Amino acid sequence: MAKRVMKPAAVLLISLVSVAHTASGAEDWPGTKPLRFEAGSAAGGIIDLVPRVLSNYLAPSIGVPVVVEDRPGAGGNIAAGFVAKATPDGHTLLVTASNQVVNPTLLPNPGFDYERDLAPVSMALSVQILLVAAPSFPAKNITDVIQIARQKPKSVSIAIGPIGTPNHLGAEMLAQYGGIDPTFVPYDGIAQALPDLMANRVNLAVGAMSTFLPQVRSGAIKALAVLSAQRSTFAPDIPTSAEAGLPKMKFDGWLCIMTTGGTPAPIIARLDDAIASVLTLPDAREAFAKQGIDIFYMNAQQLGPFLHAEAARFGSLLKHSRVVKLPR
Image 1: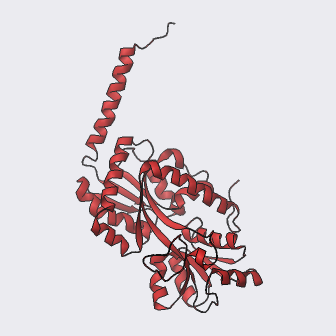
Image 2: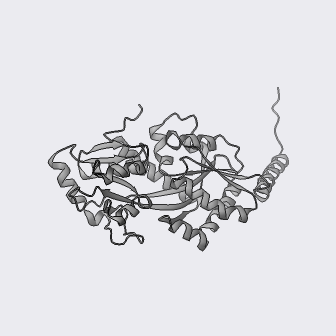
């Protein structure tokens, strides 16, 4: 049976139609369909707060309603799976943090492929992380913590949130880079550790500045370091981890926006442009600043390599963790 050979003119025509269709889809976006942010956390957390602030400014600029839906559970995997399996039309967005880069290590068979089924849109924001201590814990800096912990292994306790969260990753950095063996005390969320921390039932915790700074300012707990390269504009009196004795313990929390894999590049570009425009608005910047959140923008082309680098960094932490048992 003879093979059918497509004539060059026909190939050209199909290519032109395909390009025209893609361009038309980008021009028509967002149409009348609402835009949906899927947040992989419960209401009230930063991952829930960020899309609600964004939605206030995005809706008027793109001309369609913007809805925020919380899908907590499985370390953000439920929300990620929902977006991964959505129609790739740029109307379903994932708001995610470090779980975007640690979940493929922790959950190698989530029912979708993080690399293939989720596409980068924008890096949006960063949150500085604090190492804090109970009021009666004798350490004044990280060097003191290391000295106390090395004198008697397991004697120093540190609260951690769910595995793979910034709270857990920061605690792993202290243990591994500081060469200590603390007792990890798990909580459903790091905010739930605050009563125990203030009552001296747990010694240390790592968490977002927005979570801990009010208690630091009131004297209920004390800050040992901010885990950034530079001191915080929100709390310039708190030393960096390098100044406090452990330069390798450097970590900022971040939040990025992903969409469904296979979404046309022109639509992703329009999404990115819309988000970037919101991040320049003084009112939006002020709303985030009130929560201790900094603007930290990258476009889709910059975000992809950043996520790969973070995955490698945190993958090494998890590999050497004393509390994480990685699947084989």
